[in-house]
Structure formats: structure tokens, C-alpha cells
Length: 115
Image (cartoon, rainbow, N blue to C red; front, side, top):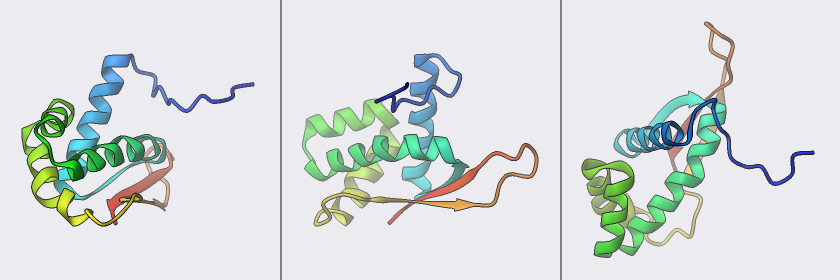
């Protein structure tokens, strides 16, 4: 039995997985809505919600952490636009909506967006 195994590996090594999540998170922050596979969206949600919570804190150390995770432009938008927008909200910043399967390979697709 596989209990407590929340990490999805996506058939990638650790550094590749980190880069995948960082790229998806950066795209989501900059565009505020992206379409990806359902598994990637489900893995991306807690990653980005933790980043949004850090941006609400607004300290220099949280800014540096955001820059290290998603880059300068993503961190800037998180600190200046998204963080203040969700200042009063306690959590649940993202919504995952399932859409019809992809035609080419039939994989499950979802749209992940800011609430």
C-alpha cells in the first residue's frame, strides 16, 4: 500500500521536477491562469499557495525567497500585485477546473487560476 505518498514524480529527476514546478509557478503568477495537465495542476497548487502566503508577509527575506523560487519578475508581481490583493484572505488562492481531455494523447487537462 502507498500511504502518505503525496509527491508526484512526473517521470523526472529531482532537479527537473523543481524546474518544472518553478516554471509553471512563474507562468501562473505572470498570466494568472494557465492550462496544464491535471496532475501538474494538483502539484502546483500547494507550491504557489505557499509562495502567495510568503508574499503577504512582505519582508526582505520573503522577497529573496520568492526570487530564488520563481525569478525576479514573478517575485515582483507577487509582492506588488498579488500579495496585497489576498491580504485579508486566509488561504485558497487558486482554483482548479477540469476541462475536456486533450485530443492528441487523451490526457486529463485542467485550468488553474487565481480566485
